[in-house]
Amino acid sequence: MAAVSMAAVKELRDRLGAGMLDSKNALIEAEGDIEKAIEILRLKGLKGVAKRGDREASEGLVAVKETEGAATMIELVCETDFVAKNEKFIALADRVVDAIAAAGAADVEAALAAPLEGKTVEAVITDESAIIGERIVLRKVSRIEAPATSVYLHRTSKDLPPQIGVVVGYEGDDAEAALSIARHISFADPLYVNRDEVPEADVEKERDIVTEISKNEGKPEAALPKIVEGRLNAFFKQVVLTEQVHALDDEKRDVKKVADAAGITVTGFARSKVGA
Image (cartoon, rainbow, N blue to C red; front, side, top):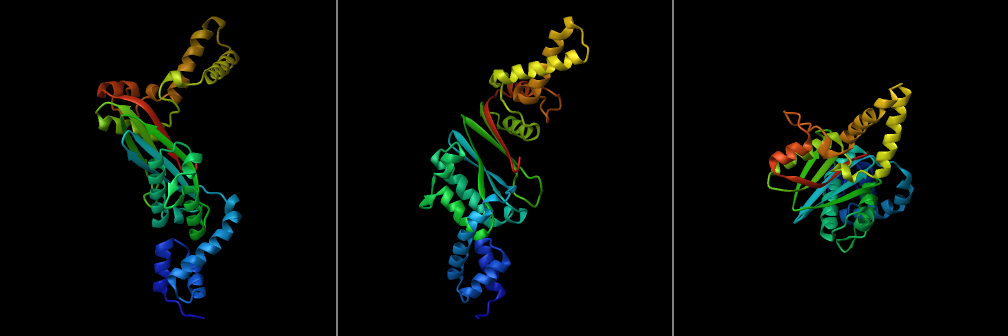
């Protein structure tokens, strides 16, 4: 059995992001040859990919690539925070988001089929999963096309990469105001830009619910329409970006007023949160 130095184990771990024991065993099997050890880890890892398919992947990161007239955001997840903060995993996310942005993919299916390093994104992720030894999944892909984009990435822990990401598409020139709106979205988690984007079926469902609640509370029949509309407005303020009170505005204006004052118009947004 060939002796394996800790320096060689460390080099292999640094190159692949694999575990210490796996790296040591591969080097022993490869008689100290790092390149051969890499192949051993890949082959062993690929055999285990199917077994990892049902394991939960709830850690990871959000990454964004801005290109002319668009921004692409991905959520790449893994099993442990140890891997999430590993340089190899972070580098994989950068390679993946670059490839997806270059392909103009706007959903997971198209993103997995995007070309990357002579393979597909899906194949590269599978290879890296085999080497690292954890399930790695491209969980979400968003693409916002607009004259201008603003990106906000938030770290929920200083030791981890960003786990909340927001992209705002807008028209106008005030990048600082657009960034403040992106930061607001990271906290407030709206679902739509404007009220007219809310599906009518959702509005009617909410109307039925608040009507029933109001009746059960014994509200006067004559006052019901006004009460219901008031409660519907409260619902819109929960889900519609432009009607939410801007979380960072000292004057407590809604987002539309903040945007109007800055001369910008939000045309779209996307938000991702790892594990949500």
